[in-house]
Length: 272
Ligand SMILES: Nc1ncnc2c1ncn2[C@@H]1O[C@H](COP(=O)(O)OP(=O)(O)OP(=O)(O)O)[C@@H](O)[C@H]1O
Image (cartoon, rainbow, N blue to C red; front, side, top):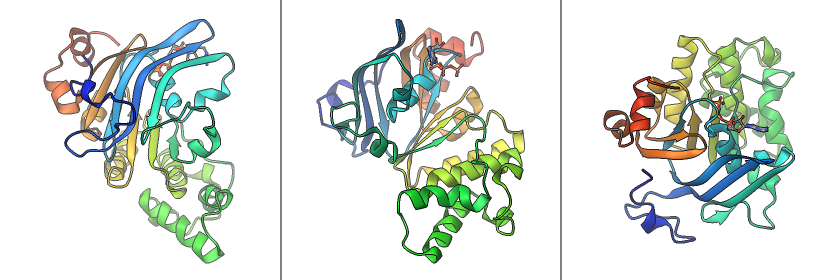
């Protein structure tokens, strides 16, 4: 079952739905192929501003592929084919003339495994600030690095270690450093692909707190295999199976009263 209000919001360019919540991303009839293999089938899904949307579903169902369609990260893979639309604030990211490099600046990305650059803590955050020309003076850059690290809940732990290698931090700290790096360039949407999968429970809890907090300023999409995590951090959940969107709903509603048998089987642990 897809979003019940989808039809009325389907009109091209009508990215605002009735209760005033802005549809940040509207995915319309999206199909995706790797060569001959179809990985996404006719996906229609709205992602709302200032909400955390969780993508859930068994391995291989297309979650990462869909996430990478949103900022056109799949473009770097050869022999792919996309049909349909991904409307970011009403503008199709696949429209001719869209520059994927400019598009990607509107997104932050946090990967499954922490992947800091092999540089200092400071430089990990400052790099994006510099290449996007976000500050004019060294003082401004220092301040933005500090604010980004604070926002990622890491400043207190690294303020005396800014020259240390980012890779010398603990796994949880490295993932928060990657979050600071993503935040530093002021993205509108933060995409996270199982960001806590390599972290211990304490580091996971710390990261989850931060993710919850991010929705004040950003739109967040998170892939997770951890259903408790989806329940804790997300307002909406989308369940996928074999490249199809099976069900999307408020997370609590979906977990309490799944409408589709497959969703029910997945969330009760019968498969996946
Ligand atoms: N680069 C690629 N080339 C060819 N096929 C791919 C590629 N990446 C993914 N696929 C295939 O596309 C389908 C969807 O994969 P995807 O990684 O999007 O699923 P997923 O739900 O994110 O899985 P997981 O939870 O295991 O990360 C799978 O059948 C996968 O084998």
